[in-house]
Length: 75
Image 1 (cartoon, rainbow, N blue to C red):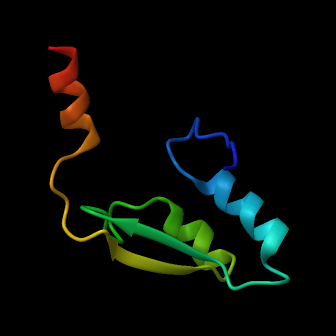
Image 2 (image 1 turned 90 degrees about the vertical axis):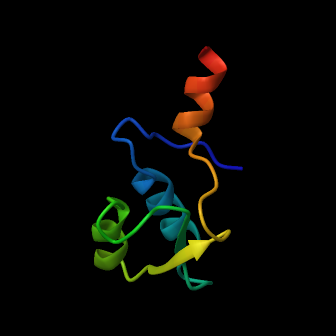
């Protein structure tokens, strides 16, 4: 588990940390699932600029969004 700064609503800070720490030993991948596409994933630019491969469709189709779950929980 690694902590990271997501003030910009992305995982770019984490991806950068992982890339800096492990890219000399491993190929780095960034994966997305559910409703994420190349139009809705701000991390794409960072990944493309740093030779990080992208994986789409992890976990199958999106059943419920975390936003919807939180809205229902607050009710």
